[in-house]
Image 1: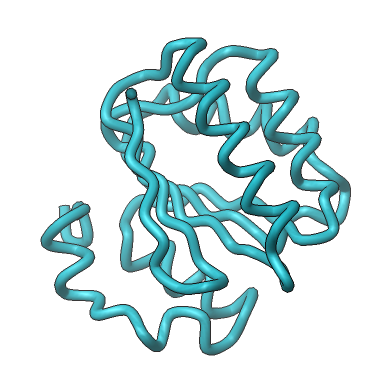
Image 2: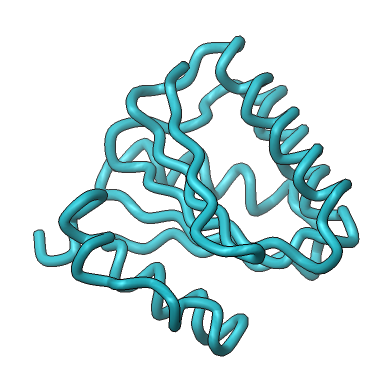
Length: 140
């Protein structure tokens, strides 16, 4: 797979793209997200590391945008430095639900701060230094 998915809490899912996605990986991730949303008792929030890769297929972006309309989709924040990431996320934002908030920031620390403004308290259980060391780019 081209991604890793980690549950940081009942409300927060961390997705790390290891490289630009293949169709198989995109479908697998989208199916997982849909299953998580269907089974969740409350909204789920997503933190995505788009530094080393991202979802690029327009069909997959459309399907992800459709998932933002799910009752249990809280919000999503992505971080990374790739110029192409901003282009793909802008496309995604245009397709997503009008009320959906998707932010693209440069570092994991900024992403966590953004999530905290959307859902206060969601990042309190996260040891930021560990997350930054593991999934990085906080100060680069």
